[in-house]
Image (cartoon, rainbow, N blue to C red):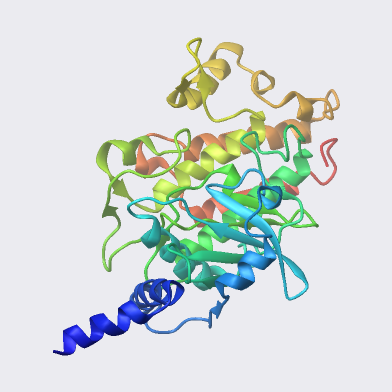
Length: 346
């Protein structure tokens, strides 16, 4: 009798209310599990508010470079990013996971702050602070082909490393991002990086160093050990971050394209190592736009480039044990950044 009454009541609810009830119960469950019942309050926006803010999600409001989709909108007289999900079997769980981790990480200055969410759509929609400069492209720059100064690239790398270190160490159990890539980094008006997209993040179980899960991530950035073993650890993120460092150094996409037009993602790092071995000089792989600023005989700048490369290659070692911990990567980037104070690349 009670079940029939409950069914009757649910059928009387508006469609938006059904979505909110379903999504809200799952969100609450995940918040309790991940935050020990403690978290920052999450503002709830109505579907009508987001529809008005984006002119009914008009294509003219789309933000280029975001995956899967993000729209520019205005709420409470401020620009915001409104992030939607594409329909897929696990899309709801991924959106809620993104909300849960973003809530915990939003106090970090190098994480894209979550302002709230809307549960009244079939899939939860996230509302983030706005980042004026936009999303980094696959070459580590902005827009179609705007390269960033070398000094800016190092600072971005250092600050993103701090955010990942926080993700790994600030909570009772380490959280692994699992999908680190250049286009999950946005820049605000002062070119301060903001890490985002925790949809595929996983938490390491108590008293364990890794967790098994199906392979997810972005080709080109995927740790080969993880691909073969489905085992995720902190070193999985270290590898992907190492690829980001190589993208910053080379100005190249993390994959090659063959003559048939398909992508050979796995060739990027071996290709760079082969160039270094054959040419025996770092200039063979460094972004020409960086080298344009390099004065002949500037040993300080040469040292900085070499040590940045050494760190990137250390992060992308095939042997997990040979990779540094993320906290040590962050410390090393602080040291490397200081080498540029008097160089021609400053």
